[in-house]
Every structure is written in structure tokens, then in C-alpha cells.
Figure 1: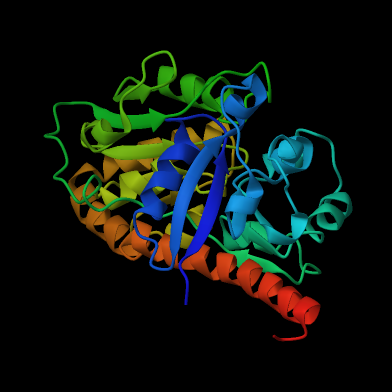
Figure 2: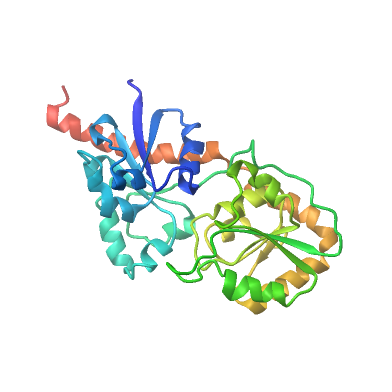
Length: 318
């Protein structure tokens, strides 16, 4: 059997989904992969022909709908897309029925969490396509010594101009932290970025990781921090309900009051956080990049088989 090829389409080189693409590509068993970026295609600094690949996979379904024409000779029959977040349709004021109708055109659609999949019960071509972490970068590390402050880590983009405060940074996190004198907030943002290869060291500075997002795909910092052995406080966003239980963290409503209450309880259990961190790691232990690559390849296989069947019908099976 000849080797199969996949073109993965991300947004910007070295951003989150490029990192994910490179991570899972290194674990593929059946597919040789190339990654291209919409930013480069839009600027005209790169070009790509879909005829050179067996499968084309777009990380962002709406970008593929809007900008897929930038890929030469793109045929929807060899395209699969992923749905990474509720925000992909909420920010565009699209109804679920409208989104489902668009997704039905693709041979395969991947979802970053089971929670997202459940939003489309009538879609028959859906696949679980979770994101996994790199074990060489994210692994259990001891919590820092307690020195009078509960150290809380948060990573993300607090910018509100495009989608509002979906991360909850200004609406919930800062008000809660400011009201508690025993909490120290440690952050990395676009204004003070940390290389992805150094994010394990970032998580190791905290006793607990915090997520107050309204909606998410995974999110990766939640997964990576748990892999580093950190208990978490999170809203019911992305994979949080799948990986958080009372033994490794707090799953809370998205209110400042509930966040304050969780931080107070976390502080009261400062001597139990190391054990909770061990449990956090156990809850995500299998969600590694190799595991993620396997799910993605299953989605690619669906597209491959869809097109192989079409070719056989066209050639009469010759």
C-alpha cells in the first residue's frame, strides 16, 4: 500500500494549532504530513495544491469554509475539519442547525471534546479528535514550597476586543484574586509570552491551575498543567468535566463568588494539594500526543476510504 499524505491547515506558524499539528504529526503511523498556514496563504507568501495530498485537514471549520478557496484544486470530498470550541459559532451568531448543515458536506468532522460532539447528535460523520500533550515536556513535578501564599497559575489571552471576556480574566479572575490576600497570581499572556517548550516550568511555579473560560476546546493549559501534577479549578469548559473530579480539583460555576469559595477551600487544603496533583496526573495520563494522533488518523482514514470508494466506482474497480 502506498504511503498516504495529509495536508494540515493551521492559522499561524508557531501558534497553538501549529504546535498541536507538529506534535501529532510526529506520531502518525500511516500518514506523511505537511502543515500550511492560512496567514501565509492570505498574504500570498505560500501556496499549496490539494492534488498533492490524499487528505486535507483544517483545524478550523469556519476558516476552511471561508478561505478554503486559497488552496488550489481543493475538493470537499478529501477534506475533514475539526470543531475546537463553542465559540467558533457563538461569536458568529450562528445556530447549531446552520453549523450542522455546513459540516454535513465533509466526509469527516472531528471534535476536540465529547461535550462538543454531543451538540451535534444528528451529524453522522463525526469523530472524537482530542488534543494530547507531549510527555517529554509535561510530566509530574513537585509543588513549590508553601511560603504563605497560594500560588495560582493562569495562561491565555485576556484580550476582550474580539470575543468579549470569554476567558473570564477581568470579569472573574482579577476581582477574586484582588479580594484574597493569601493568593498570588502567576500568568503568561501574549504580552509576556513563554515558549511552549518552557511551559512545564511555568506550571511548576504554581500550587494550582485556574481556568474561568466561558467555553473552550480542550483547553491545552488545563491538560498540560494536570500532566505536570497540578490540581485545577475550572469552569465546565472543554474537557474539564471529563478529567476533573473532587479528588484532583474543583469544577465550579462561572461566577466570582464561586471562584473565591474554591480558592479559599484550596488554600485550606494546602497540605493535600500534592496528593491531588498526583490524582490530576492520573486523570490525564493517557491523553498523550500518541493517543491524539491515533484518533486523528482514524478521521483521515474515513476521508481516504470515502475517496477510495469513489475512485473504484469511477474506474469500475479496475
